Length: 499
Image (tube, rainbow, N blue to C red; front, side):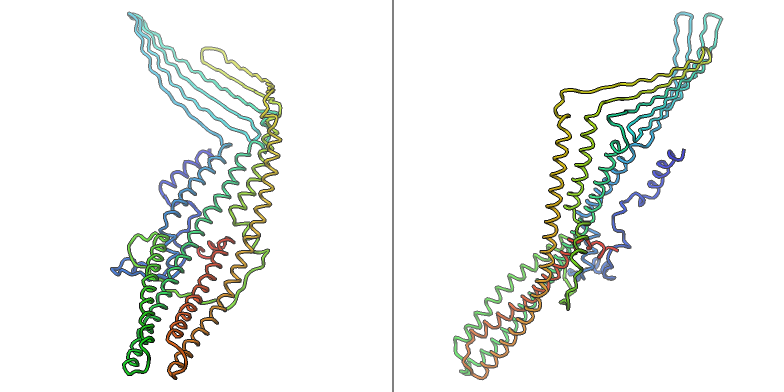
């Protein structure tokens, strides 16, 4: 009885408390990354600008991204599908209740029949391949007939019970064979769980990269604006020197041409900034129109501490969808061999049935029967070749798994190499920026002392300084992004951002 009450009580709980029916893989409010406490106020105020920290962007993406919501809805469907597959050996119970009224009249002869029927059917599929069914019916027939002034009543009670059991003994026999669909469903479930985790991790990674792209565009704009302001200030100084005859006209023209080019550069960088804002807005699916501003400037790392390669490889294997798909393909190929061998078995089936009928106006009857049925199909070439095909499929799956593992190793090495290379590039870029700044200072000092140096040289040195500043910023962002992408590859992004 408890077995039948459980689904009913579960349904009532879900209807009364809809939150119980939600997918358990969806991060709830408590598990989301901590955001700026003033974020809600910033979203609702009248300002057209929205300053964001990195955690704010990730928070908004997990809250609003529609691709993520679609993935979560699909996850709920996947869980329902798994539950359906696992329930195939649950017993089914079908009650039946009917009431029939039948009135007939022929001349003076009247017949009134009232039939009440109560029945139930119980069916159980057994993991060994058998099937058990039990049917019971109880009937009460009240018959009343009248002819002229005479009438008679008849009340008949009857019941019948039928029990049927069917069990294959060779083909389709065995728990392992008959639970293959459940085993396949569990493999699919593992893949579905990993897919939803990777989808969430991908959204987080895309948000982080988009946020840093916005930050990079903002900082590049600041560098260009500062360079432009310094160039205009220097133009005013050169204009005064030219009026006193201290410099040539050509030096003044070169500075003016440089300022014109910098104005073009500013427009280009402003366009890049707008594109970065658009990309981040699209990623976090912000429901309102505001200009996003990245306010969290990343600090260049002081050192690089990576786990051992073997440790990272195990993480990658556990969280890589391609590797898991290759493992599942091997397992499914093994299942295919089991099914193919089963198809070549003789089809020998045992059937047992028992029937019992009882009525108040006749004697009880019992019937017990059993049978053995043997079948074998000949001439079906696909059935004869099924085992060979399945064995070849298993070999192919093993080759694919080995290739996938090699590719996984190589991809991990490349990502580790990228992290190390970008870390070295930060140090080199910092040195280049310091040297470029020294060149500009020295060149301006030499020009002040009337040394043999042209305005073209100074402008080139200033351009080199701007390039070096941008190069340093690019190196920092590239290194941080390489670490973020390595974390996603290892499958630790979700645990880092969603507790």
